[in-house]
Length: 128
Image 1 (cartoon, rainbow, N blue to C red):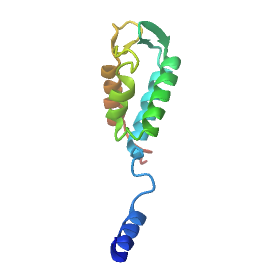
Image 2: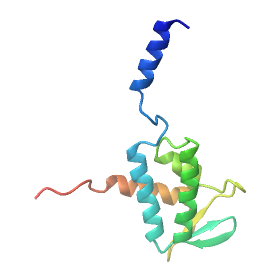
Image 3: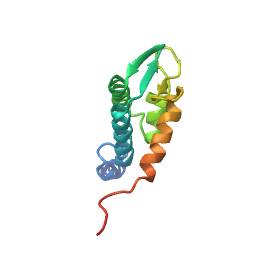
């Protein structure tokens, strides 16, 4: 390899972000918002035929999310939903969420609805 080419590659590497595969900050904020919403809900979460509390579901999905981040598989919030929140990676069975007074629904559907709500919510402090 020529010295000029090597120097060019080193220069290009210096310009790249330190963690090019880290989730974008907006995705991190949205995923944390989804996890907080789930954890604070009175809903229950079905995983592999067993119902769990919202707090247990939050902890489980956070662990799956952190695993996917370490594997550099999260590039947006939708990657979290499809990779961690949709189905069991063990059995392939879809997760379900059931909130009080509501029928159970696929967790991916529930998470996408909450994501829409988060994206429509006002951002930042209001001007007075």
